[in-house]
Image (tube, rainbow, N blue to C red):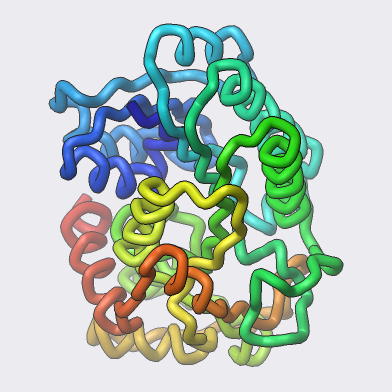
Length: 317
């Protein structure tokens, strides 16, 4: 049985799709907090509830008694830890919350994994840990010295604790650094979802800076393929990038949205935001070698799939 924390969210619900489709038994822990409308998460998991191989536990990762109950009732062999407070900008407003959920919550989970002899942990980290790294593409061997947001710092702290638990207790742990994941079910505050909503409503899209900031946008199906491979291949301790290994500037992203949607955007220039980095760019050679990872979704194709979902579920409401 596999425990997926945060399994009702954007990435988590897609991972559960993949696990259930191949016959795995899954327990999901999610607190359905109000970071965004909880009804979105309810919709994400609506099809999972009909499966006899799916169990949902609603509650907080920091609740030790709740965690103990999950590990005592279910024979958890592997854990995929996605639950976290997400987002660079919100972390600037409430860094203590990010510390409590992302660091203490991860430690609570690691303790359960240690006590109950779980076979493996896959930890969801973030490209944000690279911070103001000037070398591109970003390699797992690059020193992490310049994190520039509480969110990034909390994710790197999670990696450090994972390494400690591997070193001291021998737990196989793979930390996956995700690079700007997008696709159907993407959270509403994330750029592609937010820009699409503004575009369809005929409202201006904010362009921060001169539009030259660039991101390694990674389509959700490619991320899930990498995660499933990590679940299936315990590797001792490894940190691995999951990205598309290509960059798209903010200006190019807006142009791609216009091209795929057939709509013309109105642009409103804004100053650069605190905590934002100028570029993210994944070196995925390690993922290819260790996980057989082979991302191949072009930005236009990924945006087309996202827009089809958006028109069917969000814009139609």
